[in-house]
Amino acid sequence: MLHRFIHHVRENNLLDVQKHYLLAISGGMDSVVLAHLLHLGGFKFDLVHCNYQLRGRESELDEEWVRRLAKKMNVPIHVNVLDTYAYMKTHGLSLQMAARELRYEWFEQLQKEMGTSGVLVAHHADDQLETVLLNLLRGTGIEGVYGMSEKRDFIIRPLLPFNRSEIREFLQAESLDWREDSSNQKTLYKRNFVRHKVLPVLSDFDPSGPALMQYSFERIKDTGKAFFYFFEEWLKARIQHESPFEFLEYKELVDVPGKASLLFYWLRPKGFVYAQVEDILLAVQQGESGKCFLSGNWILNLDRECLILGTKNTGNVTSTIEDHDISLVLNGDTNYDILHLKEDWRIDRSSENAFLDSQLLDFPLVLRNWQEGDRFMPLGMRQFKKVSDFLIDLKVPLIKKKSIKVLCSGEAIVWVVGYRIDDRYKVTSSTREVVYFKKKV
Image 1 (cartoon, one colour):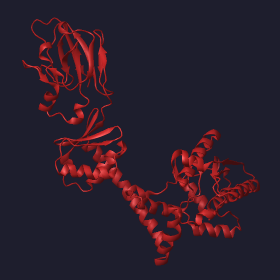
Image 2 (cartoon, rainbow, N blue to C red; image 1 turned 180 degrees about the vertical axis):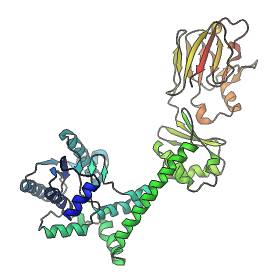
Image 3 (spheres, rainbow, N blue to C red; image 1 turned 90 degrees about the vertical axis):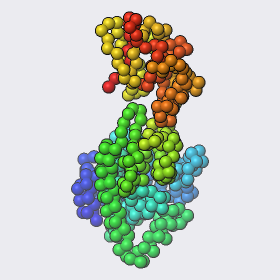
Image 4 (cartoon, one colour; image 1 turned 90 degrees about the horizontal axis):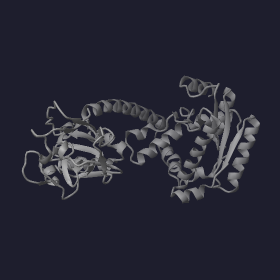
């Protein structure tokens, strides 16, 4: 096993004899074997041990045992005595989750302080299979079969290719001692139930069953990688961007296999869950235009022909524009240049921009969110119209309505930004100076 271990860590660039590591050791069979493999292989490491104070005197004996092991191996050891129950109650976590958070927070802090090249943990092939089965029981998707990575952030798992039987054989061959955690036998915990109840049944049915399942999961994992490769191409080709919104036309989902997965992985970074995706597809199928789905600070709006994704309206935003200002910022990506023209201008008739008679404006101008009851006289009309009705006539999606701003001179709206100026402030033959709001490309 030592030869295979050294070959594995070198071939996969997991460990380097020139670097220094921390090894998380409980005193159990797996971490003890890893400690001896590292020691025999000439790798430099310190031991790190967490005393969770969960098993009374037994926890104290574990700590004493690993301290003796460190002395025997002549390696430094770092011990952290943790108040796991208090952390669990304070943070509203399960006991196992509280212990997990406490140890990984400490591991990360310690390895940064010491400048080591990572923290080694002794998860092996059987742990990996248990993790995948637990993930599937939780209802995870294709990524659930990925299991644990051999190397992720500062955590390194060099024993993942080895199963529990191989580890036990090494223990016996080397006449090694270890500590048995009594809680590992309790099937109250889900992982222990899978380990002691589920996997033995599979092995009884077919002794090679666990190994074949692991092989199948590896194949599915590779299929997943292919999916995500093609998904990124689909994303680039199908999602349209018009800051600050993203758009997906319904026609891109017609007769597309796996549409739920495509939608999920588009929306997941914004906090949407798979159950919402199923509801979204049903709403699209039933033509529920105007319906919205929320997640954190994000909103997905079903428009007439597409899905529109954007952030929620964060409240009223008000700013002022002085007569000497040269730019207008609406959000991080939508900006306007403000030009003051006195001669040789050519009227810009784009609804995105504004061409206003400077003499009619009362500076400072005020930029704010539009409000219910707001009225203005749209360019080309001779009577006032509610901004809300104006936006309805243009069939502006609900999500976009929430972000629309108006530019005001005194109490009067002179421009529904990006849509229409007020007819009373347009440029005429008597205009001597123009204030030109030109959208930056």
